Structure formats: structure tokens, C-alpha cells
Length: 520
Image (cartoon, rainbow, N blue to C red):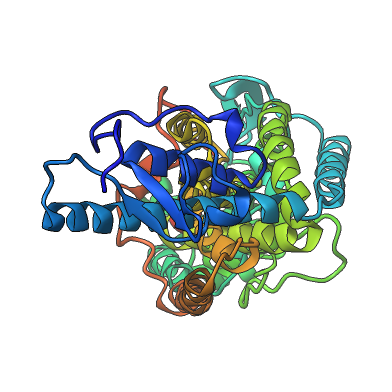
């Protein structure tokens, strides 16, 4: 028999009734939904009044009340719908309550890794600045003017442009000497062999010429008068009697900031802050020495092999380096914020693994898409932490207050770092690669609250997909970088790393000119 005053399905549910007494939030809300649907509990003593049911009876058998005019079939259908709704609400609230209780029991870790990584990177940056000093602070190269003697002993004006660093930090060549990402120092490059061969083909036509002050040197024949040509290469190596009495004044010079080789005088080479090779005559004999001068590490006693570069560990060292005070302040603030939050939840070991997998994977991505650009900073690792935040946000979407607001805040951080990545020395390809590896790593290392069998199955599936994907991506990246070496497949990719706001804004940061040897 239907009770008088039963509620319709489209009526709004009532607020919590304090007369229900104790019980869990799930039980109280279930009873509220039961009152809204017109459900009463049938016990051995008959029908209880809704709102005054004893706690022991709230999990019993519920029956839907209806209007006196309802047929038996309509009442049965309403009962079935009500029971399904109650089971759904009770199950959903129970899972949420279990998840909240599980979250409240998770341990809180001390941020040891966050403190250590911050101290190490700050100390490393200070050491580099003390050792090599600060580059000119400007958006354009700083110009120096001077007078040097040319081949014939005459004073000629020359201009040198020093690469600036508006981040307030060391120069690009100094960063390379301390371990910045720079692929020519990390692998044997087929383009280097091509550059040597091209240089050799040009220098075959060079002649040994004598200056007016009886100096000699190898140079293009069109720069020598007929009476000043002594002969070919052997004539400069062993000058005939009465020729080149003052010696050889034109020899290879490796320009310190780019590694490019030019044929010039010792005085001119010194003005350009280069390395003059007094034991060689031509550049194609010197290119490997120029590469050695660029890649040798200040803090390492091992000799760099120009013919077999193998400094793969730059993928790791570059993660801990900063190119200037501005980058240090910005990225360190972002790192402290995200690292601290995440490490407090997952501990130092998990965040260390995520940080390194993302940072190294990011620079490996950069080496493939833009191999000749100098890269420093933990941008890839920080993007990996943003990937962790995104995964946690998606997984906990239903249990977070204002999830869209959290998503907007996360996207703002992503956009800010991408904009910063358009500046010199900061690598957007490392950002993108680090984000991908961070998302995959979070599925493996970030604890996941499992409520029930399906949650555990989901977690195991994600791990079984993410772990082999990371391994495959690393293997594929190393194979492409070290063996395939197709650095020209993306001719416009460098614009994602540095946009030339001014004519010289990106000069000196992209060292692709190293392979374009132009003896002069």
C-alpha cells in the first residue's frame, strides 16, 4: 500500500536530516536519496517512518511507495529504478570515501631531493661563473675594434664580435667547456668528414705565396701575384733557397667561440681569441684540433678525441647547468614549487627517477631535432614534472575542487616555459620530449590509489604500456642520434628553439657553422 505524501522522482532531494542519527556519510546520503525517491525500509515490525529508521535497518530491503492510483506494474518499475539508483549512489560514495581515507593515510616525505638538486645546480653555476666569468650582457654581440698586421706587414683595421648572453651568465663556448649539450662533442658525425673533404678540395688549389717582407703562407692563387708564388704545399714546407727567409706567417687558426678554422696571421688570430696552430699549414689538417678545442672539458683531465667524439654524458650534465642568473631564478622557482609538492607525496627516489628520465630523454629528443644547438637547464625535467601533475589531475578529476581551474593553472605554466624556450640556450625540444617522458614515468612511479579490482587492473595495464614505451623511445632515440644522424630532416626546427628577434639574436648559439669551413 502506497504511503501518503510520497515524493516524485523529479522532486529535489532533501537536505541531511539530523534525526537520522549516526552512521557513515554514505549511509546518511543513501537514506536521503531513499526519502527523495519515496523508498521505505520494510522490517519484521512493518513499515518504518522515513527519517527515523534505526541504523541497523538502513541496509535492508527497500520498497518504493507510490500513488494509490498506480498499478502494480508501475510500482514494480519504480521500485526497480529506485534500487538501481541507490546501489549506484551507495557504490560511488563508498569508493569516494575509501579513496579519501586512503589518501589521508599516505605518508608525507621530506623534500630531500628538492633541496639537494637546488643546492647542486646553484653551486655549479657559481663555479662556472667564477672560472670563466660573465659574457657581455646584451641582446646583440659586443664589438671590439683594433689594428693588426696583414700578410704584407701593413696595419689594417679589424672588428671582432663577442657573443653576448643577456641571461647574465657565461658565454656559449664556456658552457660547452663545462658540459652543455652539444652534439658534435657527443658522437662521430658524418658531416664532419664531409667538411674535411670539402675543405681539402678547396685547399688543393692553394699556392705558397711570399709577402713583400719575405714571409710565406698558403692562400688562394688569386690573392698572389705571379712573381710572389713560390710553389705548392711542399714549397712552404721546404722553401727554396732565398725564399720565405722570415718563415711562415699564415697558418690555421681555430676561432674559439665557433671552432671554425681560418688561415691568418698569429696576431690576427690572437685578436679574435683563437688558437693558432704553428705546426700546420692548411685547415683540413686542423679541423679535428678545432673540434678538440671546442669540446675539451675544463674539469676533466682526459684528452678529447676529435676523430671519435664520445661525450654522451653531456645528456646528463646539461640537466644540472644554467646559462645565466635570469634562467636560474625563473626555472629554480618553478622547480622548487613543483618538486616540493610532488616529492612530499611520492618521496625522493621516485621523483629522482622521473626527473632524470624526463631530463635526459628531453635532451635526447633535442639532439635528434636540433643537434647543433647548445642546450642547458632542467627544462625537460621540469616539463616531466608538469606531465606528472597532468596525470594526477586527470586521474583525480572527480575528487578535486575546481578541476578546470587547476587545469588552466597547469596550462599557463606549460605556455610560459614554451615561451622561455624560444630564447637562446633554452631548448623547446627538450621541453616537449621531457613532457612525454614525464607522463609515461608518472604511470610507473607515482602511487595510484586502487579501490577495488578494476583500479588495480588499470594500474597494471598502464605500467605494462608505459615501461616498454620508455625503453623503446630511448633505444630509438639513441639509434637515430648516434647511427642515422639525419640532422637536416627538419630545416625549420631551429625556429622552435630560438626566434631571431634581431639580426644577431641567435648568432653564436647555433654552431652549425662549425661544419662550414671557409679558409681565408
